[in-house]
Image 1: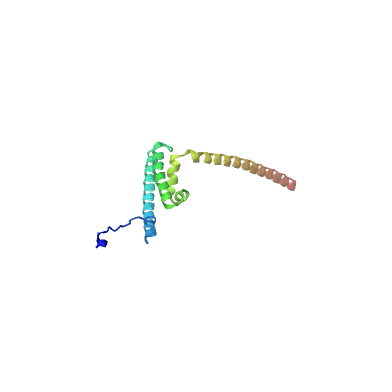
Image 2: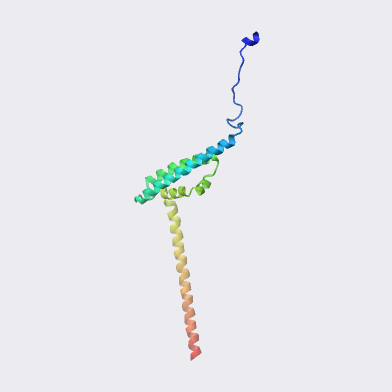
Length: 152
């Protein structure tokens, strides 16, 4: 009878990480990340569409609207990167619309490089063009001199 009157203790402690012993943990994580990836793509697509609308309405690059859109999407990309352990650079490569929004939000970063490359290209082209024109003129004058001696 003593056995019936004694309290039995039940231990409900969790000894491992939640879900690690569950056989479908990988499947669950995969499905969860798949759903989050779709949500991220939809968020980037919606922000890209909004940015295109702002751009069509004449909003200048670097304005507050583009910065707000980019910051909103960047937070979601950062959260997904942390959850999935995928580097942000890889996500940017998979989401080209994100780079377009970033360029609209921060136009200064790409303008200076383009101007430098364009200026350097013009200087090199003009230098090579003048050398090429001089060579052609020299060849033409030499050819005329040679032809004149041939018929004289």
